[in-house]
Image (cartoon, rainbow, N blue to C red; front, side):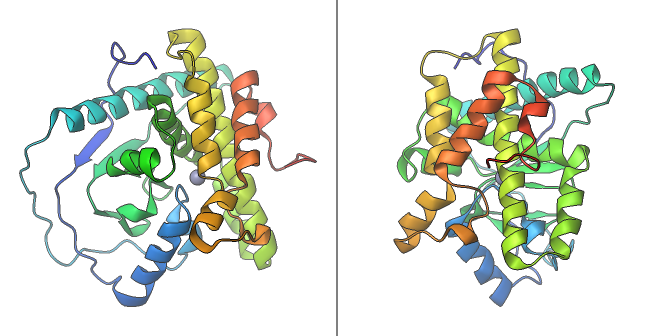
Length: 285
Ligand SMILES: [Zn+2]
């Protein structure tokens, strides 16, 4: 992926090395988060934890000064460039349909973080919180992507950000709200299916980003799309479930299977059109 010349976004909030305490969210919920963490990532935690509210960490957070390695600095630069690239792409696409894109913030953190959607730990993986319009990521996740999920490569890392930005786009367009209110009156299976549709659409939107970023800024190199597809496929619910429990229960999917994730990313990437990403109206999910 060609990114070194790219513009760096000013919307990165660097909270690495800042300690946060669990505050009110000790015990039960913390455990649930950890369990979910092991299974899923990328989900807006407010979807799961309807009860969570913004809370004070209790202990004033203290900044810890840390020496950063060259690699850490490089990763932070990379994230800032990818974020800037999503800004350019979505500004353009919103403008062309007569809307205005509002840029989200991206928070870098280590180990744990407080968001408007609640306290979160790194093990949850990157997530987007619709209550504060922020994407949260611990760069350590990229290491896991390589080792645990066997999806190396910069473009796989960029895809992860683009997917979370996809959730931001859904939020701006009012799709996330609509889904949440539908979920409140749905049974568990239906609510789950709505989550899957939301997630697959975010994958498709990540594909749209890849499509336009490459056309206007030529960032994609040979093998990049395959790397993103590998990432999409390695973090499908079926694979994650198999890894963690040894069998697959499709009704409990909240992100979609590996095959579905790959297919929707490809669709966005090949067409570059929002209309092709309507996972809510499709016959074949
Ligand atoms: Zn997601």
